[in-house]
Amino acid sequence: MKNESICCINNDFSIDNLKNLVTATYGDTQPLCYLHSFGCQQNATDGEKLKNLISKIGYGFTDETEKASLIILNTCAVREHAEDRVFGNIGRFKRLKKEKPDTIICICGCMAQQKHIAERIKNNYRQVDLVFGTFALNEFYEMLYNVLKTKSRVFNITERQEEINENFKQLRDNKVKASVPIMYGCNNFCTYCIVPYVRGRERSRTVEAVYNEVSDLVADGYKEITLLGQNVNSYSYGFPMLLRKLNTIDGDFRIRFMSSHPKDATYELIDAILECDKVCKHLHLPMQSGCDRVLKEMNRRYTIEEYAKIIDYARNKKPDFSFTSDIIVGFPGETYEEFCETKKAVKRFKFDNIYSFIYSKRKGTKAELMEDNVSDKQKGLWLRELLLEHREVTVSWLSRFVGKTLRVLADGEGRTSENHLQGRSDENIIVEFIGDKSLTGSFVDVKINKAMNWALLGEIV
Ligand code: SAH
Ligand code: SF4
Ligand code: F3S
Image (cartoon, rainbow, N blue to C red):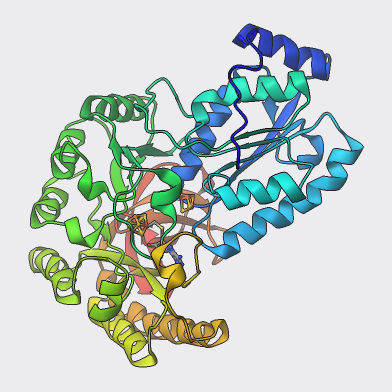
């Protein structure tokens, strides 16, 4: 697809001109923006950066598309299901655009970064005005200016590798928990995965930039900081060192991070987690499969015994150390026997939580071309089997916390009953307890009385 260039059409672009144009287009009432981010927390941070930009040129925000003059879907491409949902939404915008032609409809993010998707939107979804990929955030103002001024459609999905723009701040909705990207992109090319194609190569923020941002967030009262990267273990300046450095920041807060690629997870990482009092004793370590042959086909570059070494090392030092994992069921060529090795591994490693997905074929990846003889229906049955297996392990494994007191960051109303609050422990396990809503957003010590398959029940001490 030809990339319609966006910067040179209107040489009169300036932020003031853009602001004036927004006012001229929508009159005296403040125009509203609806922005929804799909997918992972990385994508959500991009959404928050966009929100910040948008708030500075006169827009307010709304949760209702009908009230919006600017609709932005910040999309995810990781599985087909995610893309289907977006196309469903875009379809519904057709009527809206007809009734209110001034509404600007914009599709951005990982899905938009793919050529065939941009092409499809261009040809079949005329209601969409602006499509831009993950590399074009910097040009958002110019793109919007062009759409508003020329009333023409803009497509911008050029891939470029530029320096990280530290001027881009996030407009955060949550006042207690904050995500902080420490790196962007991915170099790993797992054969099933689209992320390296839509996010480009790895780029790390400097230690100083991360340290300053986390310090500011803590000073603003944030209680939980989650460091983000597709593989934080390849952070250029050393991830264990970063953890140690952030741990020196004064204040009552905790540090999480994700994700951590097993091939780069080291004993030093575990040591840093255990030494740093602010770092949660939990590691999200996506296993993907319990079978060495499948792991090899996935290009994961570890065996299940190498994976086990990390878990064993951590649990030797701290027996209740919490691990969670991602698992793909039904990778091309996977047999039922190989799937059973994954089930066995889930039992062996006692994950506190697993995020399991049926393999989804992604255009342009290596696995796209691999033979796949198992039906989605069959894979669905395997997935259920896996979840049942996991559930069986969880209740008894979660029971290790019964009688112990866990520090919980209260999130709000619980599920069990009206007077219950819900929060997350350091291990990222859901904890329910009786408590007043005013505790929301603060740390409470909860003594655990009971383990269920989805949460722990306890009481404030
Ligand atoms: N960088 C992270 C993963 C990001 S994607 C990591 O490597 O840990 C999150 C999860 O989505 C992956 O761990 C994987 O389990 C799943 N996933 C990615 N591509 C997929 C695909 N094509 N089909 C099904 N699940 C997929
Ligand atoms: Fe995808 Fe693998 Fe990179 Fe994770 S590490 S984003 S699964 S390619
Ligand atoms: Fe995240 Fe989905 Fe993109 S998982 S990086 S939003 S493809």
